[in-house]
Structure formats: C-alpha cells, structure tokens
Length: 294
Image 1 (cartoon, one colour):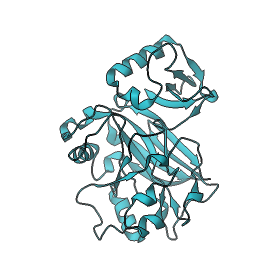
Image 2 (cartoon, rainbow, N blue to C red):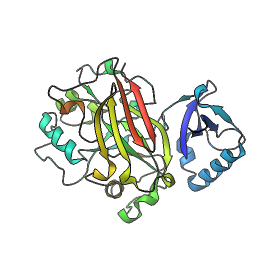
Image 3 (cartoon, one colour):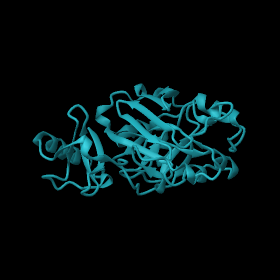
Image 4 (tube, one colour):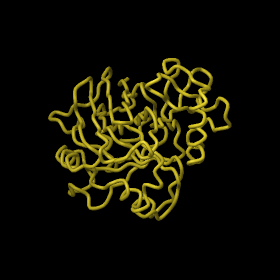
C-alpha cells in the first residue's frame, strides 16, 4: 500500500493512495483508525489489515486532484537519523570537494550517523526555502528512507527487516558552507524546510528486493544522480543493527540511508540550487518526490 498524509481543507489525515484509480481512500471514513501516521504505524499489521478492509469497502474515496499531499510524517517525533558517505562514488566526490571536514578517511569503516531537525520536514511540491541558507550554498541529496515499524533495541541484522514498516523518499537538502564551517553536519542539514519527504510510505510487503530499488535525481529535468540501493556501503540491516545498539528504535522513526554521486558539490564549479529550480527524486516503485526551490 501507498500510505499518505493529505489535506483537502478538512484537516490533515491519512489515507491510501491508488495512483491507477486517481484516488485517495480517506482512512478516517467509516473507521476508528488514527488520523496521524505515527499512531497508525504503531498499530502494525492490525492497522494495515484494517486499512485494506477500508480500501475494499469503497468508502471515503476522494479524487487525488482535490487533495494536497503532505509529508507522510509531517512532524516526526524525533530527529531523522541520517547516514553520511554511504555510497562509494559519493564518498569519493565528497572528499574531493573540500567540503568534508570529518577527516581524511574517504570510505568510512563504520556508518557515519547524523540527524536532521524535525522542523526541516516539508511535503511534496512545497518550496525549499533557500533564503534560509545565508551562505547561498544549498545542495540536494536524493535518498531512500526506511520507516521503522516494530520498535526495539539490540536488533540483529538477521532480524532487521522484521522491524521495517516501509520506505519513503527524502531530499537531504544541505547548506554546504555551513556543513563545512561548523565541522559537523547538523546545522548545515537542519535548516527549516531542508528535508522534503514523500510522496508516500510504500509498505514493506510491496518491496521484494530492496537492493533493486532504483534512485534517480533530476534538477530542472537534467539527470544528476543514478544508483541502485544495492550499492550502499552499509546496507539497511547493518544500519538498523548499528543504531539500535545504542538507542531504542520506535514506530515511525526514520533512517535516511545516504546519497549517491551527482550532488551539486561534486561538479566543478559546484551546481548549487537557485530560486526557481526544481528537484525531482524518483525511487521506483515508491514514486517521485518533486519540490521547487523558493
């Protein structure tokens, strides 16, 4: 299922998006399901079963064009967990750019984990507020994000996929000068509006082989990034095991798995985002996350 958070003037709520039918099934109609995504995720398989029944009932269908998609989780309960330098080609281009202030190591020996502030999240089609970057060095990073379902601590790699609820797309928008200047990544990654997310959460049962998911990023229609998730340095089970060794993962937590080569800082001169640009990140079969730059 493609789970969405949407608004049509009657408040934000959750639904199931059916692209083929051009409709969203409003899960607040005829059910007692939560109107908020994190609470729905916490219901686990029971919630999904009830959602499927709601879809089969045919009630609550509204045309996609009459609703506005929001970020699937518009206000995460915690910071978004992110992974740095997790594709070999991006690790090399980032090291060569001169922006990386984390050390001389090109390919990390263990996952590099940082976070993005919840205020950074915006939805599909919302403008990326580039004016918030007073250094004028805003860049894009297309990424697959893992949505945690069943929580836990000390999760073994062998069990990791049992804790994955689904997948979405994030754009880890970054102010490169701030990222370098402060010798860490939090400030340069956490500007308000610098984490577009969406268009949906694709539930894990829809994905037979995560490694075959294909990521592409286009800026103003120009291809910039192209990779398969199988090219990750540290795969999803490794990331879940690493993070859960030190903290409890809970339903609705998000892990952005890293970006591949082709970001703006990798060009000479850098191709930073400018007002009026459009960034479109596609990961099949999730869909496309597209945002203008404001």
